[in-house]
Image (cartoon, rainbow, N blue to C red; front, side):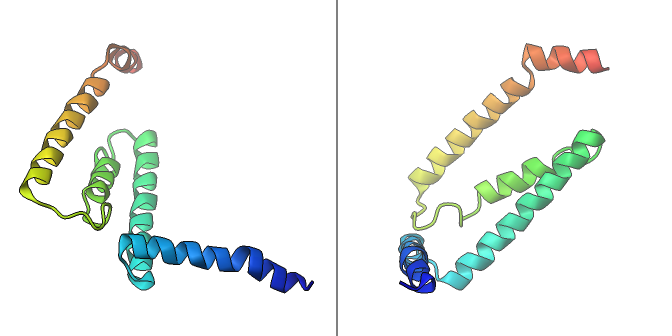
Length: 120
């Protein structure tokens, strides 16, 4: 059998089917999904660069990566096809405040504080 036809049968067709299933699941046409995913990917790359700059120069880009990631996580595109009503919104707000409290506790952990004091 021709290798091209075999590749098409085993790889290309299943990939197209999986793409179509996923796009139907999220309810987006391919072009819109492509644009949204590309924008999010570029934002994450920028957040990575900001994190690297912050690692080298801690005074720079203090909250840039966190802000970008929060904006992406809270974007309407991260949870497609989910209706937003007041009960879901309140639940989300409560869980976000719990996460913020947990993050604050992690940032103020004794080990991190000890290491921070050792560096100073």
